Image 1: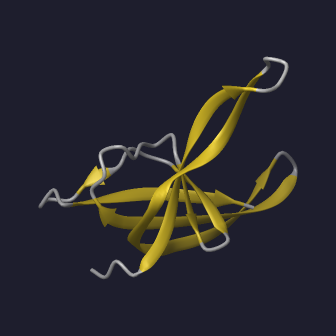
Image 2: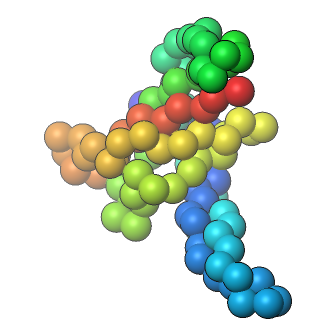
Image 3: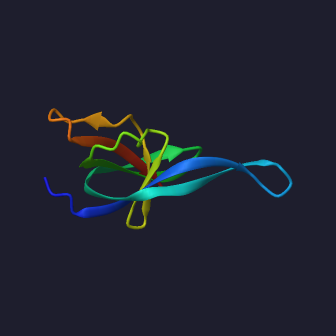
Length: 102
């Protein structure tokens, strides 16, 4: 396994704007080395419009702070992490199932 792709992990942070209204924004948690493998593309219909779904499997060193509520950015593509991180048998690495919809 070659961890030769740089990815950014983002987490959603709750805050408030200048008049006190709640806001949520994505903040970078960090830059990590990973192995990104694209599984397949899928054309589908959502709400009457054609969309393209790109799925990826991402392997990286185990990081306990990464959850399924976060995003992963690889190049120009932002993915949603779709499942809790799955640890490998040797417990040093984890796999993330990710999906991007355009």
